Picture 1 (cartoon, helix red, strand yellow):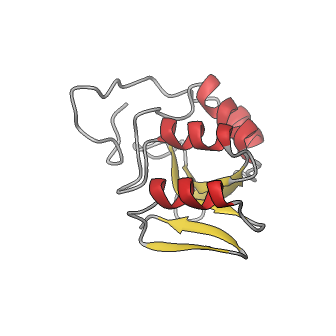
Picture 2: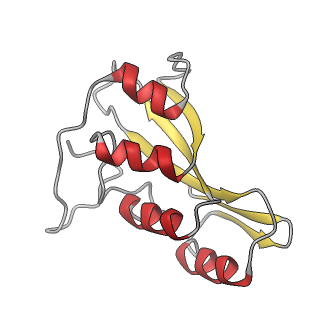
Length: 139
């Protein structure tokens, strides 16, 4: 399934997204009440890995200038205290998907975390990485 978030390249491998909304909602901690057709979430690396393992997210897709989903997963596997946030699109819509549009850390980052986070999120529309934590949002 190609979404507007998927970059159109020769390397893009479209996958058939899993339509098991009950399982997707459980993984993401969603209520199933889609305001405006979407519901927001914030998850850790274990839940993100579950999304990949169950084909709820396209590995090479990205939200605008955000890193590709598989790059975010690799980063979070290396730095598991970070959280990925975004939105899940209702199964009622033709553009059903999970999109990651923000990455955050809710504690003081290590120097390595600051460097890697800054490198990966350098194109964020909102960016903060200091001694209080890290946050990047991609509009």
